Length: 224
Image 1: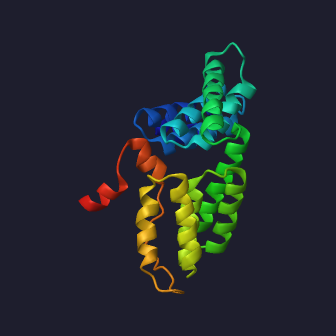
Image 2 (image 1 turned 90 degrees about the vertical axis):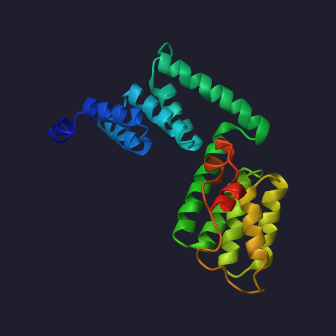
């Protein structure tokens, strides 16, 4: 810590602190320092690469893609970091094309809209969130989380029918979407026009916390 206090504008110091944080699994802190390193020295390929890996560890695919793309754009084609990044992006493009039916550029734009929608949702700006979830779905029609979160937003506005319709669409795309199942059951119990209480339904990073970790959301509720 003495080093970072003494040399906060040294990109290698910021990078080294980032590496230490990443080794401890403290990926948010690592990303903060890697970003400071690249703010100081924008052509620092290793820092961009480690930022991408940290986002990958956090299962933040959209930001991982952006960071890997920076590595490819800035680095020497013969550099191992560049070659790794190119392989990652190539393989991911194939997966996204197969599963989502869109290219990687569109996938990233859709994810940006989804992240902005979640920002509005976290600040209880339900109408603005709905607009952004719809913009995400205009780019990626097979994104169940957008429909699931729209359902929550509609329920907060007292629009039960629209909420259930959105959740039904989410479950049509992904019948295993447990969070949508639970939230739909809660919303179904509401009276027409009744607004969902603040904490009655959940909006979590469902994909990161459950399917990707091979965990069951419903089982976690039972255990609680």
